[in-house]
Amino acid sequence: MKNIPIIFILLILSYLAYSQESYFVEGKGYYGYVFSKEHSIWSFPPEIIIGEVPIGSNRYTLTEENIIQAETILRNNINTEYVKSCQLLWKKPPINKRTLKKYYRQYIGYITPNNEEIVYICLIAKGFVSNIKELSDDLIDVHDGGYCYWRISVNLQTQQVFDMKVNGIG
Figure 1 (tube, rainbow, N blue to C red):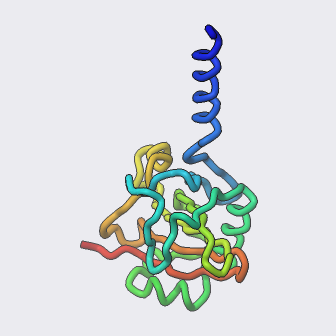
Figure 2 (figure 1 turned 180 degrees about the vertical axis):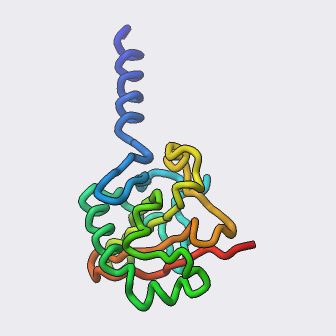
């Protein structure tokens, strides 16, 4: 009987250690934080809508392999007409392969009703954040900011990018 409280405490501690809400990821030309499916975004339950895409109950925790794949797709698609058209007002400095390394990232994974895996990426200019650890708590939501803050979604199955949003200037 005396061991029951100790066992209970150990179970709670192991659960907390296992249910990691965000983790740091770094690769060639990128680094940032991945939010687990359990992480509450913007202090709301996981059922939210980003852009026109509902995420939440369909969220999943991205693996490092998913991040590598998403970053490769992003690099391969960053100079496409779609991306260029999404940044018409913000051509200087342009968002392209060379400038991608100047941004911290935040990643969220979700699955569409068609079972396609999507990686939602928020990109924040390095000078915009004083401490990268800030990015581990919650998604950064910036109003205005121009090219210093933008978002894009990457479809891992179709290897396409979509739903790119570059902030305006207030």
